[in-house]
Length: 217
Ligand SMILES: C[S@@+](CC[C@H](N)C(=O)[O-])C[C@H]1O[C@@H](n2cnc3c(N)ncnc32)[C@H](O)[C@@H]1O
Image (cartoon, rainbow, N blue to C red; front, side, top):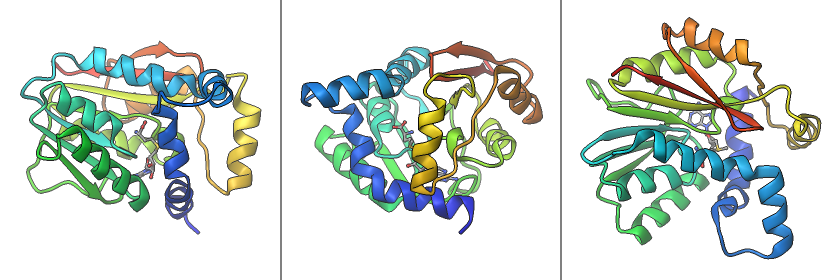
C-alpha cells in the first residue's frame, strides 16, 4: 500500500474518533485525554481563526479538511466560498452533516480528492489552510508549492514537532495503526517553505506542533 492509501484507510476508519476531539460534551476522562494529549487540535483551531480574521467575503481552501470543522467556522465568519479537500469519504460525510446542521452548506464545498489534485481550472483563493495535514504527507514541498500558487493572501499550516515529549507514544500508536507519520524540526519546516518558493514564514510554537504562517499581502 502507498503512503496515501495507508493514510486514507486510517482516517476513513478513525473519522468519528478524530472528530469527537472537537466535541465539548464529553466525560471527564475523555476530556482529560483530549486536553493533555490532543489539546493542540483545539488550540490550533482557535489560533487559525484569529490569524485569518476578518473572513467576510473571502474564498478559503482547506487542504485535508477532515470532518470540516475549519470550513464550517470559516463560513460562519462570513467566508463566501470555502473548498474543503479530503480523500477519506467518512471524514467528508461528517463534514457534509456538520455543514448542513450549521446552515452553511451553500458556502462550503467538500471534494473527495487527493491533493494537490481536486482544484478546478483557474480556481484561486484568498487564504489556504492545512491543519494536522503535513503529519501525513511524504512530499510536503510539492503540496505547499501548490497551496502557494493557489493563494493570494495567507497560508496557515501546522507541522508536528520532532522534539515533543509525546512523540514516542504517538509514533508507536501510528505504527500499530499502519499509518505513516512525518515529524519536523524548526529548520526542517523553514526548509519546506524555502523549497516551495516562500521566503518569509513565521513559526508559532504550540507545544506539540508548529503553526507556520506566511502572508503574501
Ligand atoms: C488529522 S486530519 C485533520 C483534519 C482537519 N484539518 C482538522 O484539523 O480538523 C488529516 C486529514 O488529511 C487528509 N489527507 C491527508 N493527506 C491527504 C491528501 N494528499 N489529499 C487529501 N486529503 C488528505 C486525511 O484523510 C485526514 O482527514
